[in-house]
Length: 286
Length: 248
View 1 (cartoon, chains in turn red, brown):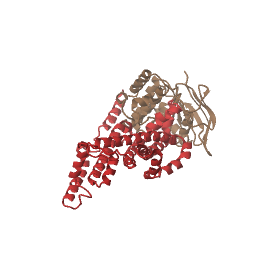
View 2: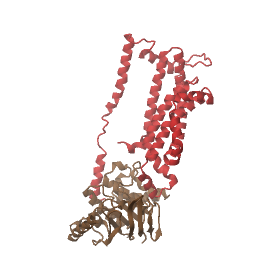
View 3: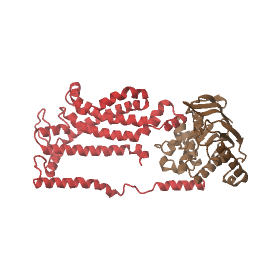
View 4: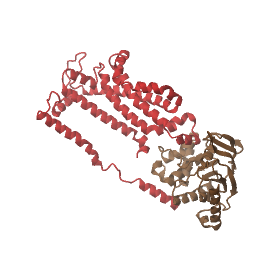
């Protein structure tokens, strides 16, 4: 390597060691301060009777119920059609997760395929765009009656709703991102000898990935949101089913437990997805 | 030695806009043909037609006497912005071509290792393109194309976006590289100094629609470097050619 090139290399290497603009690690902990403050205010508001505990039970009660939900001793008596609460947290969570997971994976598969078709073929775009845009505008609740008739009350309807809800962000992200892949990438790949049939895998998909990952995150959040709609369609398992039962018996504390579980799992799922996909989108980070 | 690229009566129009008008030129095997022309005269279009990215409206492109069309590893092209895929680490960018044509992995690795050292990028095999400097990116882009061992290299203002000092270093590097692996090269540029420094022959284009005004040999011999910049004959020729470009 000549001296000139070495100098060049040193300049580039230095560019790498700039301090991260995100600041030091402890700043990330700031995100936990707000929830803690809110929690304190909530407890105080109930204790000074600003809030009726029947409308919103204090954090201490909710914490008890949360423990009850996951670690309580389950009753020996189980009645058909009754949704258990005590000690049933793990089972409910697992069945919600499985529902959301299956619906989401199905949505990711179908969404990626149809999205690629739309992104790569102008003909497909002209044919399908209006229909898909119209279907996309239908609120998820509007599919509920049809889903119940088609798939029956319970598991099938829940999965179908989650699939529909989670489908659009993936489909739109893949379609948009692949249709906007710069021509120069495609030309370079062809000039380097990439056969036409491999362009989607070698160029379109990787180039579109950062936007697709955003779509995946949105879609995962939606899948997790729609779980509760699905579970209102008459399942007896799942966090949503527990919340529905709690509402019917006026147990606000247990409803709040459900909300907390949804929030926590949603957050964790998003973080996991981001970690899992970080390697693919590192190149697009600012 | 093979790799003679010939354009015969090459014409290109976009709708009513005639960009190339009957271009005849010949890049001789193993030589560098510098194509010089005023800004906006259609130099890039010429190169895109030669690379096969755009079909000509008239005329034909011949490689060793055979007509060619469509993009191909036989005619490696590097644009001003380079051709690196931003999502691939450098090593995978350089392997892209040979891997696409199904070369065995061991051979690909060997070719890429050799090019990494020829470009002074040995230590950067795992770096992403955005982590490289402009000069490194352009060297890597040229290496990416050379990995396919193309008989013809098409360069479209490859150093146009670099600062003057980096550009001069790139010129010397490219001369060295091409001396080691003779490749027919067609270099499109608006920079007279670059054309005289790198070219074995000079092809002068007119304003749009581009036609070939003149083709002449560049008399400064092989093995030239920055020393030639001070040669009075070089300075004189540079001034004369610049006049002709401005008058074209």
